[in-house]
Amino acid sequence: MWYLHDGAPPHFARQVRDFLNVEYPNRWIGRNGPIHWPARSPDLTPCDFSLWGHMKQLVYSEPVNSIEESTARIRVAAETIREDPTVFGRVRASLERRARDCIDNNGLQFQNLP
Image (tube, rainbow, N blue to C red; front, side, top):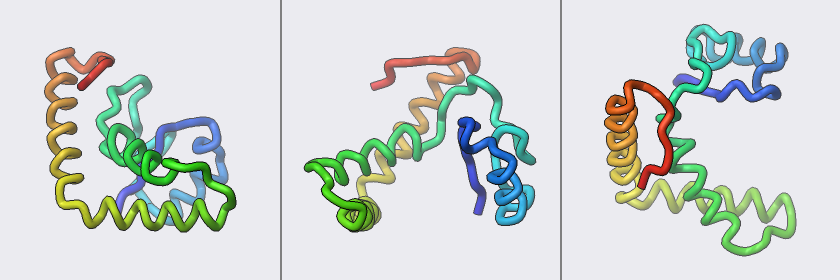
């Protein structure tokens, strides 16, 4: 298993990097990690462009009233996504479309993808 993070300041803390070096030796991608994530690189990570938005829709379709309720909804949302055979097909198609757009733009930033 690999770990990827975006280099946000909290993720860049020495304590976090030390933890990742122990738990994912030479298998994490991020700022000052063993595999560098280039600054301003096009975001092609499926979790960022697909999974989290879909999960948020499922979890926050109604207001959440407690941490316990939030935890329970996250678990149900994860199971719902895992059981839906169409989700990963859509993610794969979106990744291919984004990769093509990235290539067409010579690796530069791009926006407003369908």
